[in-house]
Image (cartoon, rainbow, N blue to C red; front, side, top):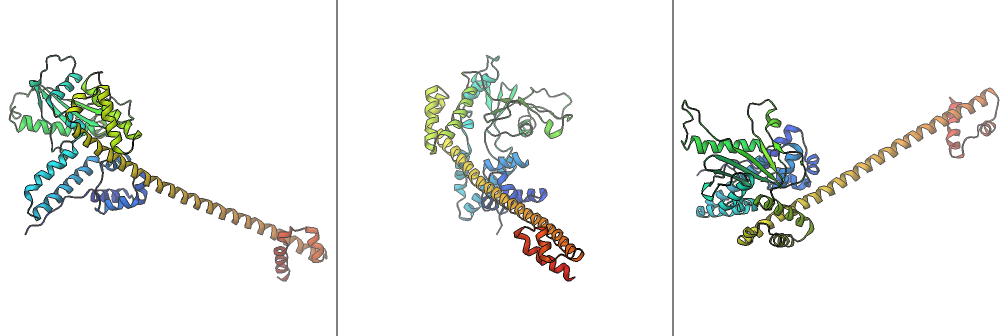
Length: 405
């Protein structure tokens, strides 16, 4: 009987990174907005990692979001198919994978699965090309370059001359240029080498149109970044070059501008409305009222609603994790303040005791000199030194000790 070799859980990858960097769960959890128990469950491979948490690991520690999510996808899929095989349910595996694929699809991928929408996107990117028609468009989105299926990625060819790669992102990722390069390499292999469309081993140079890379960024921040390159990864003098134009808005009335506005409306409603159904319904209502992606929303209303509800659930998960993280941070701060106060009080008391002992020693020494040298009685010496009432007993004890030595 053969055994099943499960892929690495992302928790195993994180454990290796933690060991390498000398990180602890207690240090990391508040930094990534996650409670300690939840992070321990992930590290112990008892809980999956979410996209939001993987993104925070990348932003804070530089861990690759895609690597963590790819590991989770492969782990989940292998576990599903292995369990189904053991139960004799191989036939349901394809249906389950198909179902998961639909859940992972976003408004972006659904919108640009339709060639007519892709043509509108191309026209928004290249308004100078007025001759492009639907038959010129060939969608060739790759599903396996990062083992995650279609997820906010789109590639298409126009008249076999121009390759456009577009990736929509709501969270900033500095590795987009590297991912685009890998994506284009896969397309070159499929379209040029494996497809034998060109003889890459011949003497004549292969003539190819340069690809164009775009990232539609719908998140906040990084307003000054217009182009992403490989400089941060390979250095400024590397021979490998890849430029990705950052798109934050489009020409009014274009499908690009409408998609970005759709994302903005949804994000704002997520902050305004609870429960999720209210934010979803308000987003659909506003888009139909304002003429944003009207045909698409009407034609795919139920699917769009399902996708938005799934996305909102992730927003709630982020809020929950942030709540627990804040609680732990507040508790840690309170404990740190209490320790600091206790230490300060102890130090102050020690200094006060030390000062009092110095005063007691000085007064006791003075009294002893008066008794021994000037023939004062103890009462006369005490009256002359005038020791504070609260110290008199301790001064007397010290004087007696000195006189007996």
